Image 1: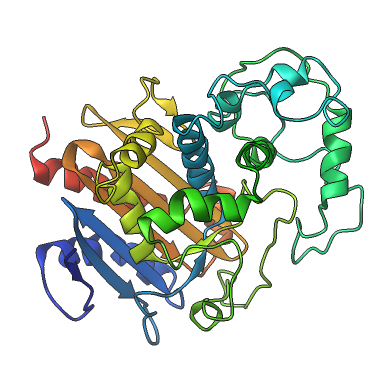
Image 2: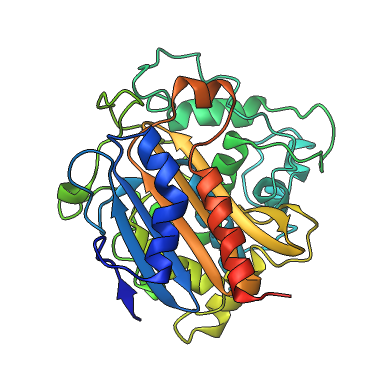
Length: 354
């Protein structure tokens, strides 16, 4: 598919990217931002940096909680393939000795994906073992995860009001691994990455990918150690590039490379009849009378945004190697959300979507 990526070139799409990200680039001058649009299957990639050399268009970033969109997609793919059901309770997936509480066993895979399971945001036993403050989840082992499952007793039965849960998505990733018969990263590779040719998307940064990985930074430009999620990969563990994510968004919009079953499964993650709130890993909102699906992340020295505007047959990807400022954190505003939403709004308006 056509790709335009010369940051010095001028086209309506590249100018749109430049215009809507200008404020972010000015505010985070040392950040390496890679911005991308897919519009009716045509890709536009614009690397940007306020000071210094912009990143390569295929620079590799840590995705943080954008990973959860892929976890929701894996659920839909396994359901389409007969390996799982959206209404499958954990009692049918996780052995009783590991998840003994009967109420906990009623939590369904769909409730985990839509954040209505009632599970806490973080594991209650996260701080039981000594943690490395530079990698706050790296110490959270399979043994600690098992301790949580064995001791989990919900306060009330699900479904509960929507409440984001990093832990819940980690549990979902674990459950899907069991249904696929593979570890989480290999399940995604076989069910999603290989069919879509997402060759730069991976849990593990291989020797081949390592030279393109941008390290995360604080808002003041300090290089930060990478965050790892050994027991909760379904919550936040993937790495990817803007071109790969644009191909993924195309598939979510129905362009699955001729694989109708794959396209159908990915479309279900955001178009499942749910009211605005949560899809399968996506947040759902209404813009100009149309549904948009989106996800954002700020974690481990990286910030990211992905969004779909199905009525415009368009999507947005924004990835940066620099964490939010103290001011943004205080106001709980993920820096790339504002330009991401602005781009989706412009794409809807310019498409004439009705």
